Image 1 (cartoon, helix red, strand yellow):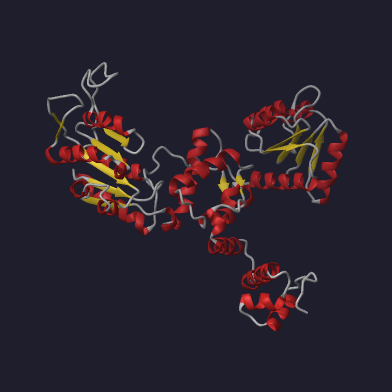
Image 2 (cartoon, helix red, strand yellow):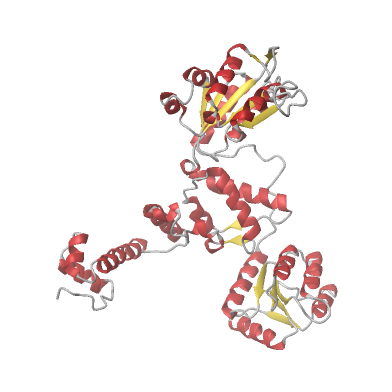
Length: 472
């Protein structure tokens, strides 16, 4: 086993870490300056480090200088940077230099040992291969619902038909629209996208159809709209359900006869464009409410593709997580993080109301913020862990229970039923007694059990009644 290198000019700090590592049976080698450590690296020290824990500021060369040399000689070796100067610049410099973790002084010895153990585990793993290959699939998914989407894209590959894509926000509707375009006869022509809900009503008409010079104040030149920009290709109209009524009429005319007029224009323009529309809303309901034209709905709804929510394809979460972590790592120029089996099982039970987009954002957060390369449940953001009592995750106690069971199974725990059942009964009884001010008869009545049963459960569960029994 290779040693842990300790580098600090403070003899007392070295002594504390040495004693802690000795108790844990971890080999170590100490240096009083960064220069000593660098000399050992250059000399090809036979006991090269498995992990390094180094102070940041020392006489002569700094911990950052040593880290730079270490990354040149042994790039895969984790280094923990210690500092008594808990300032932003030190933390940023440490992480930018490739530190495994940043440890402010004074530190808890057990916490330091825990970090060193995690770093040792990290150093034993083989360097991962580049998973963010340029040939990555456009859309990922092995769930049956996604396979149906893939089959539909394949069937439509030689079609010019109008397509309506429905699904919750964040499910990847624009990705599917891109795929439909790339695998169509129009692939060599432009793909133009516009979010009709993101543009003010008085500007949307000009965005779609363009305008002539002098058509309105500020129209100094003629401008081609999105229909003309997409000539011969595909126009993707996102959030079509929010389109204003008067523009719905103009869009219907384009779809019907292939012609339109620029704003302020009198010469008809011809549109050779395939329209793909998308919405997260139930257009049938908006038609019934008079908010969307029925004839336009039928014009757009030639072929409908429904994208499943992420909670409907949980089996895809590990695959997507691996892909997004690799993607984020490549964008940031860092090594890809890896989730432990427990952490991956934990997030697989998260409801992800923001769907795939939310999972991608989570993976980016992990890449930037999670300490070390191996990510555990405690390294996840608070809203995913459920630390915020106001989140929708915590409001759904059944979902929280499912996550707890999944995590317990992943940890290899046994007798899960008895343990969780006792926790469940304890919570019921304690809260009922708090509600009744300790009155057992009233609490038993509210819980729907007998008073003797309640008393027996209090004894079996070793609950402290706290002298709140006012009915005796």
